[in-house]
Image 1 (cartoon, rainbow, N blue to C red):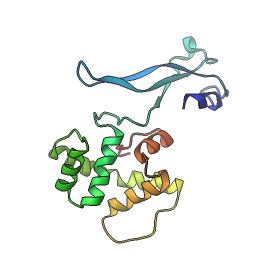
Image 2: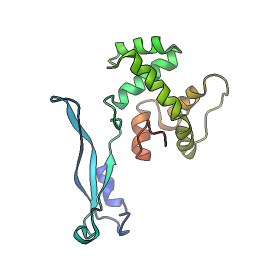
Image 3: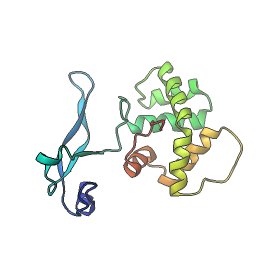
Length: 171
């Protein structure tokens, strides 16, 4: 992703090839767990002293904003949900794969995914048409569309990198 910075256009001055990495976006989850969530980017040609702060963030796809779950853990839970068709069974299956969460968090995640459904549909329809098949749970159709557009490997990470938005954003 950083290699593509030279091809990015500055949103403030319009120049191309002037983007540089300015710092990190970090997250902390206790004294022993921390990591990099993204990078701060700025234009080296903009006058930052007179024009104010002209930096913006470029997020990595493997972390979820304001969540301690990774994109991989969430995708494992979604895959388990698609296979089990029950939240309790999906949670048990994802727990065996290392899903670090309680059953109540799994219910909250499902409610959040249901709220985000319209945002997913709008973004995914820009990338490709939805798959055929109109029966079943509507949220599962969104997940099938996500798999079709971004592949089976890590579609949540690809979604976040592609749109530079949080996967669980409601707006």
